[in-house]
Image 1 (cartoon, rainbow, N blue to C red):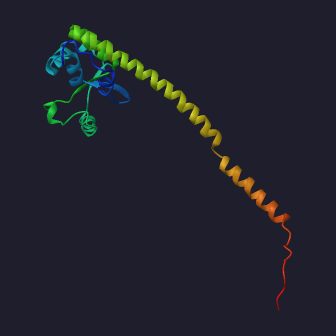
Image 2 (cartoon, one colour; image 1 turned 60 degrees about the horizontal axis):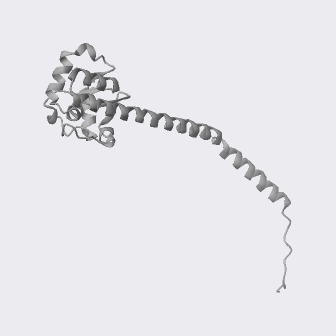
Length: 173
């Protein structure tokens, strides 16, 4: 990736995954975006472990890694070189740019944070819609029984008011 190349927000968005109910990015994706080698990124993280608490960064478990492979987020476990990948939350992404101290990392972290913020805004908007739909569903629940009851009353009313038909026409013997 070229040093000054602008990365589309859609590309960044496609590299954000949901793991342990948190939106995270893989270490190798961040290394690519920050234009550093993944091994250098991991070295800086290990040197600055105190800056990365569990809510900023964590290592994927074997099961989570398998899940990421099945989602095509990771081509294969062999691609990782045997080590489980680190994933970084929104706060970890920003902290990572601080420890890498490169202009590219700072520039990309701003873009990544903007994507996280837009994603959060979209989710809040959709959450409001989901809550409204849930309210409507609650109001509609039980309406089927009430409608059936109304139809049954109407059917009984129609049966009570039916009069026998008078035949029209000739009678044949």
